[in-house]
Length: 381
Image 1 (cartoon, rainbow, N blue to C red):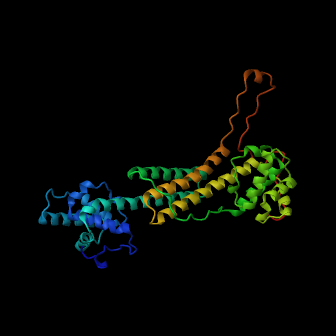
Image 2 (image 1 turned 120 degrees about the vertical axis):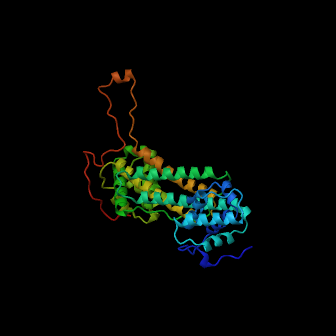
Image 3 (image 1 turned 90 degrees about the horizontal axis):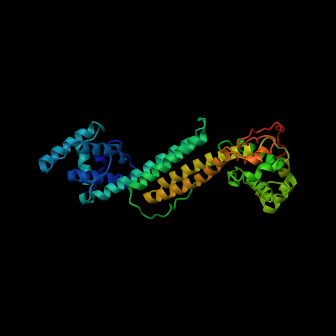
């Protein structure tokens, strides 16, 4: 086996933190320089290379016609032509760099295996890129329709995972063992607290529509205590029992919600000053939960791609699992914001009524005519 090239033989500006993919790129290029006919067996694009110098050399190899039956003289001429072509895209490449690539190839007959490694690392980088775009979309507060913008980025990631899966042989793979990052809290904690307090007070004061708000879950809340109180209100509404600050407090005590750090006086205080429509506040809460879950999904996928022990199939499986969690919140958000379709009445029933029913909507104004906002009293959890 030839000796490894010295660091002086590296191309300029090569990073020092070399991964296994970096050595695979060098070995592949060295194999092609030794046997130009290998180019016909490789389904690879220059963009698959992480190093811009390696990408420039590979692009030059594809652009310069290889001799049909290379000899020592014709092979050297082809190598010089490839180097001259690559230098137009990456200045600083020298003949010593080409020699370093050749000496970095252990076995030219393993070129297909080297190419598979290069494709796998390219897939890792592109998945990470789509995850970064999803994170940027989740953090961008300047777009007019943030949920649609975020979900478009999530759909782009899902489509890319399908494309990557189609380029690799099907194989069973376990989920990544990489620990999941912690959940991302709402960007504006004050706004989240305000929305949750308004929802709880309004739902306690007017619980008529709580049973239809099944799209709102306790995990959508920034505060576990307030999420637990919402479960109490929803449980009482489901059982069609009386709902007021006292009954909700009792349900919270039975369910152990008070152990989260909220006291009975605080519960009664925050439930006693309703303002607006519970459906409106709930829709705002689940929208914030959608954005936070999208950012958490992006962080999960990024963590998977940053772990070199995860193979391509593990990256695909783990990323799809993360997107499935986002899809669950997405489904509930769509249900919350979907306009209600009035059920058409039968002709004989319609004739007996004084007038047509007015259609309802799932996005009411936060403040109906009969209510006005009042500040909440007491400490909040």
